[in-house]
Each structure stands twice: as structure tokens, then as C-alpha cells.
Length: 628
Image 1 (cartoon, rainbow, N blue to C red):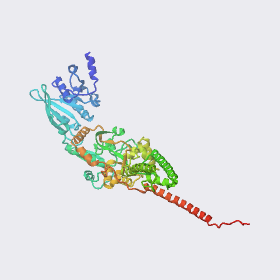
Image 2 (image 1 turned 180 degrees about the horizontal axis):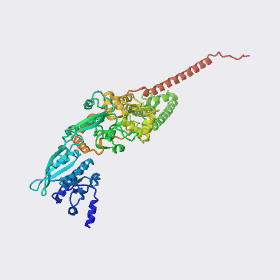
Image 3 (image 1 turned 90 degrees about the vertical axis):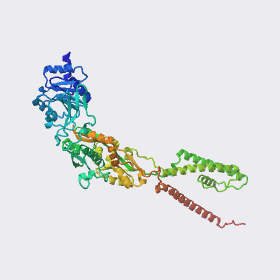
Image 4 (image 1 turned 135 degrees about the vertical axis):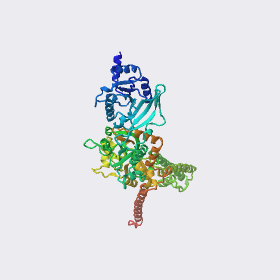
């Protein structure tokens, strides 16, 4: 039974720690350390004998921990340290630091080369040598290492010393820090006033390399341009990200060597990446000073940190009011209302005709022709009055109610036309497919990420838009700078895809309020989060993430975002703007007047012809037959 439990423990692949002091295992120390670090998995490594190995297994067999026990003497140089491999769980290692140096030092060197001194593996090394920290001078360590040395003092107490190096391969020096004490009675008494990276923030002497992506050229030196906040609409989120990362550089006090690239990093034909991602892949830089979109292909060759920026881009265009034929005059009423009005006028004319016939039957003077009645009825509904007053009371009552009805109809009609001129029109273009089928010309900001998206997108409307309106017949002339593209938007009839943080300052500076009120936006893709990026498995990831999180908590990140990503321009603050009546609105009236004039001239010519024909007939000399 006991042998089967031992076999089960040896198959545990996670790690924790070992302790062997004077040949005796302090089980309480293991339990206290696991509780201090909040871990349940681990490995105990020591130079113990087979008998001691069985005693260790037996003493911890019934504890609520998953442990592996490793004899360091049986580890050969360049062996794969499978017992230290971990994916997500935080684990600990308790190591006997009093083992022979010829066995211990090669093991620690290999752990340094294989990056087992990291933020997920918590080391507790027990030793009686107060100068044991010197062993780590030639071992590869970084700022994320969690190594605690435990050596005894008088009265059964132990000192706990933190050992780390900001970046041993980048000019950093070995550092130690007294964390507190330990004894069997009170357990670990660690300093809690400062967190890990606050105590390690002085990285003097460390030199790290980075790249910032600036697609648009600039004047002057690189550093001066990055610290200059003029023209925030140019290279916007790259300069923002550099400004935020510079706060972390100052916080940790290391030296940053900055260079420039024009590409964030896209896959080349040979399977490698260019730009900033390519430099991270080749490990020629330590971290990126520009944010990156998360892409599965990039995630294989670099690490992503905390999100710093959200890229919002959209097609911006003027939603001008368009008029088709006489729609503006017919739109106030629906077709059913117009039909009702037509029948109402027809009924009124017929009723007035009956009344006039009765008046004429009673030998009273009254106009009774159809044209007179039609003109009078139209005059009533157009608020122009009437010619003549009916003699019968029934006729006057009819006109009275016609006046009331026409007044209400006229008020509804005129108010509808006026309101349509004052209020903002509801856009008919609400999607990429609407832009594709509209008469708008289309262009995009000349950026690599936009071209990359259009090249690989599987969205059919977007792809059709790219092939038909953006690329046209094999040319790329519709990829423009932000300023040139927005100038075309201002002229009207043009939709320009641009990052909103770039567009808003230009719109605020150059567009009048009336045009700003006409602007509409349609997104080609959802808002994209952008992340801080580092080398694959970088030891600096946790350090930078901690700094960026503190900047967010203290409001510094939000302050920078408000500056580099301005609000959408609102134009005038009123809910409506007065639109001048253009010829597009007015030409149907002119056309109607012109048709009426032509028709009247034609009728006039016909009447003149008939008049002269009748006159000629009347002036013919009559002839009389010969009378016998």
C-alpha cells in the first residue's frame, strides 16, 4: 500500500520545494512555506539517502499536497528537468543548499539556462552558509525570480533573504534583500509594506533595447519627436504607447535604447516576420514600444502583455440630404392621404355644382361652370380665398367647413416640409453593404494594418468593396493620407476609412459645424484591442504588466488616453441645423411653373386661332338667291 502511494507521488510533474537541514526534514516548514506562497504543488530536492527518501515520503504522504521527491545526486548534467516543468499552476521548490557544490552549482546553472527561476516557480533554499547568495553571481537570473534563502540564526530562528538579479544578461548585478524571519512557533514573518516589484524597481545599469513603430515620417531626432505632444493625430497610438512605457522605464530606472521601424510586423514569404514582430522573433530587442493586435501567428513567436489601446476605425462620410423628383413635396402625406384629398376635392366640386344648379333654377345669378368650381375649390385648399359667395346657406356652410379642413391640412403639410429642412436626416447607409451599393466613392487611410485586413478578410461585402471601389482596376490610388482623405469627405460624396483618433483632431480643426453635423460613421470591423508585446517567454512580462496596472489604477493611463484619443466632435450643440433650400428642392416647382406656362401658351394659341376663325365666319357677306 505504501509502495503504491510512493509511485503515485513520483508521477507528480509540478514543483514546490525541498528542505533538508542537518539530515532532518522540518515538515512544518514545508507546510508554512506552502501556506505563505498559497501553493499546493511542489518538488523537494536534496542529497538524501534512500532511507531518508522513504522517511520524507512517509512524513508528507498524508498532507494535502502533491509532491515529488528528487535526489540531486542522481541528476546528470544536461538532463531534462521534467520535475520543474509547469504550465499554469504556481509551484514551489524546496532545495537543500548544503549539498556538495560540485553537484549543486551545475544544477543551478542549468535551472538558470532553462529559465526555471521565474515568477511561477517559488524557490526556498535552506542552507547554513550565510554567503550562499554568492553562488548566484554566475547564474542567469532576472527580475521575476522568486528565490528565498533560509539560513539559521540563534534561538532556533531563521533569516529569509530574497535573491534576484534585474537582468543578469543585460548589465544587472546580483541583489539581496532581507525579507523577514521564520521560526517553528510563529511561522514566516515577512515584510508586507511593499510588494515585489516595488522593492526591485531600481534597475540601474540594465540596458534594454526596444523599437517604436512610426509609419509617418517626422522632422528632428527620434527621442525629441516621441516626447513632443504636438500634432497628436500623427502616429497617434504609437506615440501614446511609447509615452506610457516611458513611465515604466522611469519607474524601474533602467536604460532604454530606442530605434524606429515602419512596420508592426507582418508575415513574409519565407515564413518570418518583418518589422517590430520580426525583431522580437530574432530577439534583437527586448520589448516593443508600440502596441500590437493579437494574432495567432504572432502569438507563436512573441508574448503579449496588458492591453493599452483600443483601435477604433470607421468609414466617415457626409450624409447629405438627397431629393428625388418631387419627393420632398409628396413626402409629407402618404399615398392614401393624397387619394383621400383627391376624392374630397371631387366631392366638394360635385356638391357645389348641385347647389349652383339650384341657385340658377331659382333665377338667381350664380356661376355654374366646372372651371369656376374647380378654381374656387383649389383656392380654398391652397389658402387663397374664393371669388364670390354662395347665395344659399347650404353653400356657405360647405365653404365654411372646407376652410377649416384646408387650414388643418395646410398646417400639417407646411410644418412637415419645414421640419424636414431643420432636422438631421436619418442615414440610409448603415453597413458596408450599403456603402458598396451607394454612389459614394471610397478610400482608406494608407496604413499597413488596414491593407493587411483587406487582403485577408473573409467578409464578402468588405472584400467586394475592396475589389470594386478601393482597388478599382488594379491600382492603389485610393489609399490616402488622413488629411487628404478627410478633405475629400468634406467636399461630399466620399467615404474614407480612417482611425478615429487620427480623424477627430483633423475634423475639429478644419470642418465647419454644419458639415460636422452631417458626418456619419460605419465600422468595417469591430474595435480592436492592442497589447504590449515582448520576447517569447520574456522574464520582463510580469514586471511590465505590474507597472501598467499601477498606471491604470492611479489614473495615468486614462489621462494619456483622454489626450491621445479625443472625443468625437459634436459641431453645434443645437438639436437641429437650418438647411438652405437648394435647387434640388426647388426645381420641381420651377418645372411645374414652366409646364403650366407652356400649357397656357398652347391653349392661348388655340383660343386665338378659334377666335379669328369665328370672326372670319361672321364677316362673310351673305348672298341671297334670285327672287323671281
